Length: 627
Image (cartoon, rainbow, N blue to C red; front, side):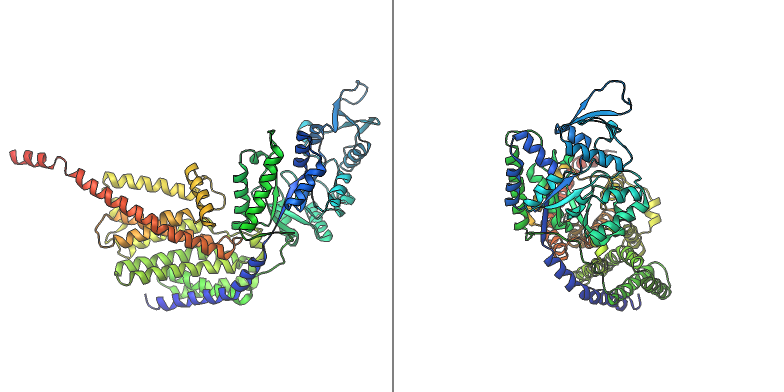
């Protein structure tokens, strides 16, 4: 194609120059963001103390020595108070309202706190005696309604030198006035941040209340924990309202931690730190009764801190991110690069690339100056389609010409790397790092390039066969079987792609991932070193052999999946850039080992097939001569 190489060169140069503007600041930010803060939960400490008869002060001292800097404190709830024996259900005579549940509260301060908090929520308790109160709380609401705070506990933790992370519960549809009354509690002056308890943030269910919550966080300079994978209702809205006070948190909930070993839990936390730049870890303890319960949790914490330090991080105090975004010059260069690659991709199938180039530039540059976040979304989505597709097209042309194949492979990797730079540097915006904004082209980048590559394999004349002859031609049995396997594999591929795959990894694959993670620091992507790059090396080694086009399609699809996965690694904006490169390097080296194994298997299988295929040939020949 005329001017193709020149335009591609300009696109790559624009991507490189744009990345050089952003990369120094990104690498600097990632090099200084090494402090990790660990928060432990007070309820877990209290449970362990009661089960072992170990004083809480002694546990707190040991936690301080090991490196824990903050304690998460939840407001009272009826379920926990009953479990701890601080509130006991009682039966009263029929002279009192039957719609209430009655409880004995021995501690006067606790009773007053409960009465005050429920009065704010409009559920005024009935006081039967100095120690017995009637509460309008159903069994289902026992752990969902906050009953106030333990001021003495907070005072104790502050005296021990701990930061306080408060964990308030929400009241669904809470009004702004009621929320203001709750937030006026002086306990919030003692807190350093909030990590909301339960399945929703405080203020959820009322848009005005969420705005009030955001205003309160900003006014008090309190951070709030945006806990990944939990999916608290209202969290996305609150994060957009007050991104400047948002910190991403990782935690393993109590119902999950009991299914982990301490080593597995540590590895999960470390993965969050290394791969997703999580800096605040909310650690829940193992609380199931056993002989050495505190020893298990103490070694769990010491092991976690040891893992953190050995991975190049330090213990410290975490603060919200300072806002940052890519400069306008970078986004202009990236817009030009993406517009060129989109026009080139279009020209492979239809005429009129110059018109498409002009329209693309108009749209991308127009959105850049009108709505920068929209521009970032378009750049990200188009890059996921154009760069992987063009890289594979370039490879296909190289294999067709049979000239300078190694140079073609190098340029193809250069194209995909340029696309990765555009995404990882163009979307290096603080809202993307916080995952308030997320890369939106995951599914399209995993699907569209595959279809485009299949089309180009036929359009380029690589097979010297038309799609019609393949689709309408008579399929041999083994070809039909291969097609069915491919169809099933494609379904699995789609369900396993993206941030939240529908089909989780199997036990064997999970164990392999864990082993690679321990061995290589950064685990390589499975689709790269097991599928993509070995398929490319097989195409290279078998290029002089004549084999069925269907097998070639399988290999080219494998290469496409590998390149798409390599590009997708750059879309994880929260992953440190050097870790992305290390992950690719590990995948590249491992793919050579996997390729040798695949090559030997194919050669041995082919020899066995040739040998078995000869069985019966002499008998068939004799019968034909007798006839």
